[in-house]
Length: 221
Image (cartoon, rainbow, N blue to C red; front, side, top):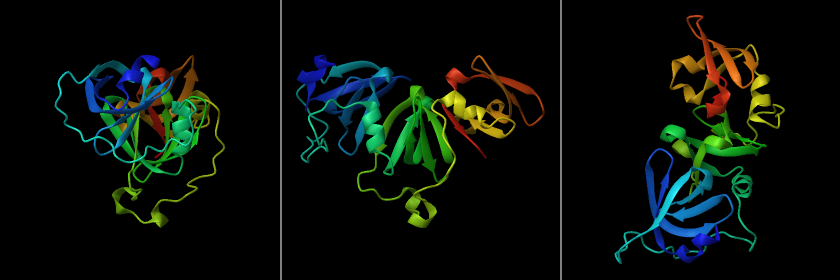
């Protein structure tokens, strides 16, 4: 990613999966992440989802330069995992595939998924493969203006598996919701997992077979 070093503090366009275009000032980058300032927030974008980066091709500037100090406490190369670990307990917005957002905070970072606490969905298990970007709240005001009593610091004491699939296996014979429930065929009782294919029994007792590799989130009702 040294190719981007000449773009530092320059305004760029970043196209990510889903034909989504972000515009902002490149603040930093690492081997697997890019940090963009859009004039309001810092966006931490995994490089795996970046399709194209272009420098703004004229002299006009739509975004004021960032005049503060970016919180980089060392000269070490940043990485997506380091950013997620640093974000634990901080109010953030996470965007997953299909441009769906979840507000809350990172609880734990595992091998290939993160555990995120949301006031809306409660405990959500998010595949790192499908996490498109993270935006920490600037002033750390709680989402939805909730009090701290409604946002517990330790929302659960469930032992966590190292991988996304192994964690899902712990919910066998329970009701599970995939991808925030936007598709009714991804809501049901978990019956079987075999070779990354998940069998759910939906509300009308119709089997639904889901490829776990394309599951973005899991949560329990």
